[in-house]
Image 1 (cartoon, rainbow, N blue to C red):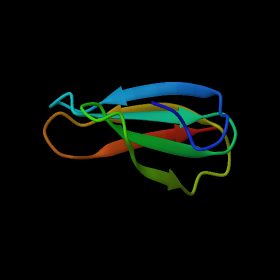
Image 2 (image 1 turned 30 degrees about the vertical axis):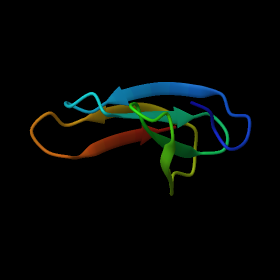
Image 3 (image 1 turned 90 degrees about the vertical axis):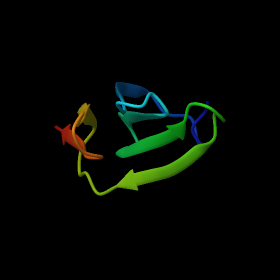
Image 4 (image 1 turned 90 degrees about the horizontal axis):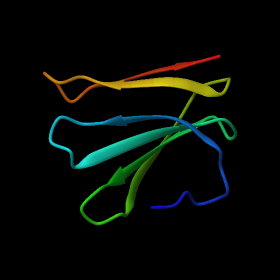
Amino acid sequence: MATPEPSQLTCLAIDHTSEIVCAGALDPYSIYVWNLKTGDIVDILSGHSGPISSLSMSSSMDLLISGSW
């Protein structure tokens, strides 16, 4: 698994099925989403105005919670 551009990853979250992994970046302020079975990046989430410092995946719903500086 790799990011489209070099990024320092600061936190991880894995969904309850262990199929999806998310990683938050220091710069750019993005969250990368990969499929663990294929290793392909499936989405890049943006919108934070600072480095991503925490991620959590809900076990009861398909919900990703993120925090930043």
